[in-house]
Image (cartoon, rainbow, N blue to C red; front, side, top):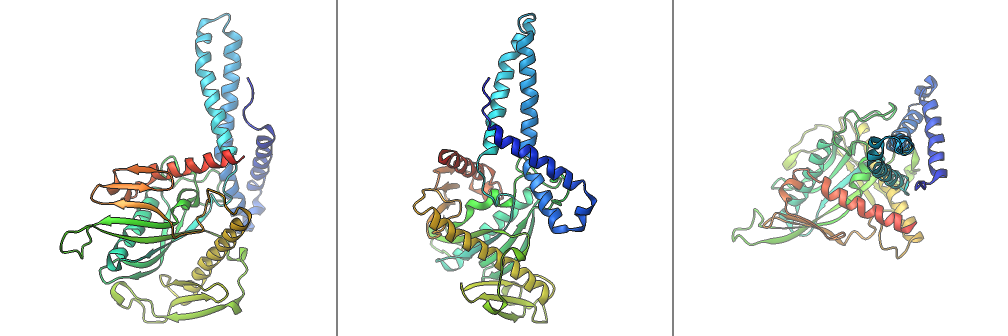
Length: 373
């Protein structure tokens, strides 16, 4: 039987996995938390490949034994078709796992939701989207921090910034005890990276007295968060730092000191605010992390645009003005316009049940990657 997996690729993975295993067993590694995180993170990334490869090798051995004994024992002959199918399925799974991947798939993310045209209704929809992502994260055992939120008069979000992270300690081989479901091994970026763009809602707003359906929209920005701020060089002279008093819902003061921080990156005009930490220093550190993530994403988008101008499918949407999804409340329908996905379970999706949609987006991306090989 022909081996459908790439020998050189799997050999490289086996060698890398062995090297990482040796590093993780070295006590000296724990004296360098940054390196320990990097090594543990990569080890966790390789875990599904190693698991599939081990199963494939066992299935191939079982198949070879069954084929050898089939001539003398009919019971072994009966096992051959099932084992052939098992081997074929595992080979396909391994091929998919070895396909080119987004280098940020294991990363945590910063996600921003911004209201658009539509006033209060758009702000209320933006808060619905933020709540949807928070509930999805909770389903998967991820940690969510609301770094900043500008609340409208009716309790919606004019804008909000969320940090979403996997909880497990990357330095522990295997990891993932906190994760839930079959996607627990995935990084946050690998699941949510397709959410950036304009989300449109069709429903009767709470401010509508005539019962008419309105259409409004909110925007979602999402980018991988670097492990360390040092990955992105930020010149302090390029920053304007403003401090002000943190505020809660409706503008009520929640802090009697000027602890909230607003950073403006003068060369790009990017503005980041953070007010949910306990001190001005903590808010500045967190805002710097968010700014670093945004600058890294901006640089990569510009590089992608230059290197792949005209490519039909972009992992990260450069033109965010394009509508990607519609949430139709009267029909309880959600439609993703990029892949033609439709489902009539909008209430469940807004409650955090996003896996079917995200699986479809991921599968379309994998198919495009394999086709581009």
